Length: 347
Ligand code: ATP
Ligand code: MG
Ligand code: MG
Image (cartoon, rainbow, N blue to C red; front, top):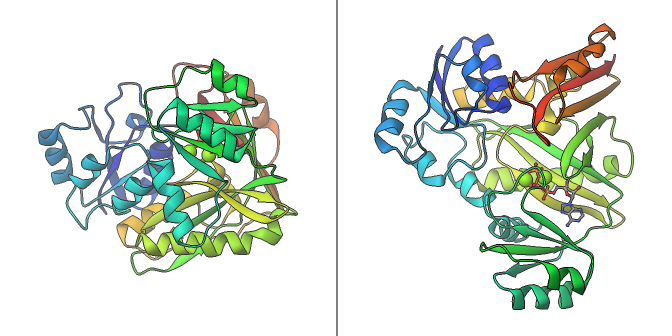
């Protein structure tokens, strides 16, 4: 037992806390936004601001170990937690919060992102489009998720018509991928690494729609190379917990898209579909317990996200055998908001 502190207040923290409770831990959360769902399963929630040092100290004093469920936790907040009692190490946040730093970091380890260029001005964007061509995607370097902070560039005219946001950007050549997949791994405090099977991911409007297994070709042939890179990333960061890397499967092998230093939506199928879920293994890793088996426990798995609509519309799935409904308990439906998911298994 003991107390695990979670930075962030969303459904990832909620599912993490549910696994932690099973293992005998009490959870408390630090979640500045009032509209959080972690409070339903945590003993106590600090609603203070991310930079409230007195509140952060009071929070840390109650925790045996701290982790996060939200990749945009400010780095100084994570650094305010006692060294050696926050996992993963805050350096993982630092690397993953800036798309440019993240791409350079991965390239240094031999990984291959889409061709990209740093954009700080309209002149930079024009030069980037000249060099890398169209189509491409302009992305904010920071704070983007679920496809937010992204602009598709199809022509020079799109460049002219765009009012550039006052924030550092990166332009990426559009990858003509055959499929998308993710590598989800867990790394323990002693450096042991386990991988779950890599699902095929489909997106709608920049938001994950489904994850399926078996992933089939060309993904299965590219997983090994992608895992090699993911292992190097995890080792280089001396990472502890669940780490996710997103890839495009192309005719020329895997192209790195981005990483998430946390449990991931494309790993929700592991709750029922793997021997040990991503949430349980994340808790085990940060708590210093041995890892559980990550093997897939079904012939096929389909995870379907419920996005932007009332979860009640998915209640029909409750009648289907070996189909599991997860309601995140969000009071308000909003366009693009993740309300829950359904996992369908064939054993
Ligand atoms: P999240 O963190 O929620 O996964 P995000 O906002 O960080 O999303 P990305 O992963 O960068 O967004 O992009 C979302 C989706 O948009 C990708 O999964 C892919 O389908 C598409 N996409 C992004 N960049 C490219 C690219 N360079 N070429 C082709 N498709 C892309
Ligand atoms: Mg992202
Ligand atoms: Mg993504």
